[in-house]
Image 1 (cartoon, rainbow, N blue to C red):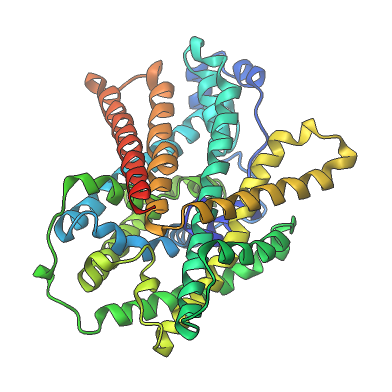
Image 2: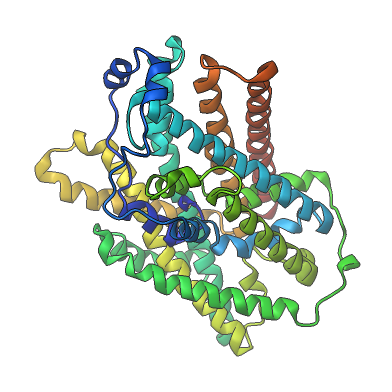
Length: 465
């Protein structure tokens, strides 16, 4: 995200950072002072009219930004997801998970808008929304408001860093395929490839100004589109029948399917920056709104890529479909080169976001004169950690499933449902208290995905080591 703060790459990062990564942190005292009469505050304050944007985005541009952030290299992992579900289960599972993810995004945005009205703040980021919800929620929870923001901040940073480790694995796999094809007798192992990538990664991650990084976004977008088209060409060449692959597989593999789909689809970190910068933010939610239209297209494209790739390659589907393409053919070789370059730029751009999050949480603990040195050391340490993680867990599809199950299930499913429930607790829970049952179902489902996905991913990692 990503998200996107997720695998939805560089474009999501550009959307977030060019408009400011976060609004200023809100103090609990300020919120509590403003919220003495909550009902009056909610009805009187028009947050949309109070948003002062120098360059607001139209509905079309917001749609394009959200679509770009949700469509990235994650779509190339969908065939690998389908092999853990089967063709029919994969199709309906993708639709179901797409609906769940979209609804949780809706809960996050709606809660952010509502708590903004309460606290009289024009817009809030993810972490600030969580802080404001706790600060204006039931009294026993208010003391946890600051801790909740810090927790979400670090969870977001670790989520993106985990995605960066996935990028390194894909980089290594793509380059290794090319090198092994042209030099079959080489003795370069996975760890050596990781060390080779560590040098350029350390250099480029020291860039602190986004304006020197963002121009690569457009180039990487073009490379991804070209890669996608080449993959479709190979998938549709001598395409097998629909019944050539099983419609379902063992239920024990389903958590890997869920984790991979959520990882690929979830862009929870991007939606608020997109909504916050719209000229008409009231068009983001609703039917048809920017969110529903975008996610409908995303789910359709992910489902099509998943089923087509699975029918073509079956259980041989790799963590990225580009790894299944025949290296000896020029178009396939170009796709592998394109995805390597695109993912490298993705890593650099995505890395910018968690470093901003981490730095804003630790900068006050560092003397002003050492800020530059501290940032350099911080960036180097986290870059090394992502490469080390890639060397330690080299199987791409397993790490994607683990990342999706552990991080994205929490940020994308559990946290939005929890804050929505907390916010609504003293403000009405709907007819027959349906909000309680719905949100608890989403929370339980999220924890189910988290626990079973992590356990199954760890089992797979142990089995293949």
